[in-house]
Image 1: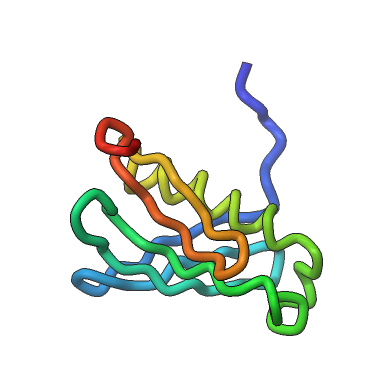
Image 2: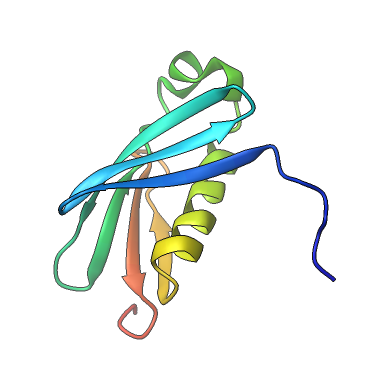
Length: 104
């Protein structure tokens, strides 16, 4: 059964050619992340931002960086990259989306 409780967050993917922004909205707050198409086996790169400074940049999401980035990953894959899986560099927050069949 599908969850009928509305979520208090959403993700918008904005495209400008081969790059753009991903905007995470939560209530009246937002966080914006740059993305770009990758090369070789990387379909796209999302720059989620480093752990250092997260709480200062997004005080409304203090200590919830992992949760926000996981939501972004889930939504981007669902909206734009259904055949991809994600890997994240915890320190830099760089998220790599790779095609499931080519990831290894």
